[in-house]
Image (tube, rainbow, N blue to C red):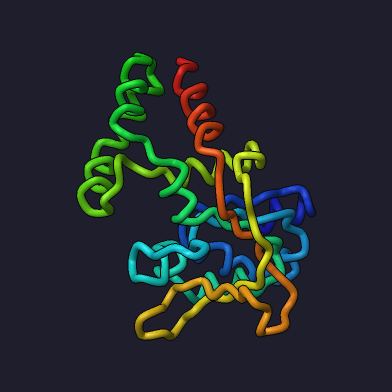
Length: 205
């Protein structure tokens, strides 16, 4: 990662769809790369919503909050696509799955298979009308930024020691910390545009 960032300064976008451990380690090894990264998309957190591992946090920050804090304090331009966006705008319902099944392509068959367990989990444990797809909508937003229809710019830090809130992204909504914003937080996404991208992809083979 360090080698590629230094080879292509200010050209690379990092898409972090998991915990930020590896990126924090790279920053600790070579802090100067923070100024050479074009942007980092982080699939995690939320804006005025709720968490999925505790009421205040989502898994990708909660599992290694110290790493998340290193990354958010690094100066890298960060854009989050959170749990809230995925719940509101990336849920494939039973009707959507029926349409995927009708496509009859290798990709659609793969989609059905890899989401079998997730579909059941999301419906039974997260009370969704189908399965949400946070990784996919994050990557889709990188490919077509217009999929994110509303965002806000705020200063964000990460809770590392809270007994009930470890892993929470602390969003300074009112500017009480008097720090320059470091994160663009996705608030709303275009569900129809996202699903069209997915269906167009699944039709390819």
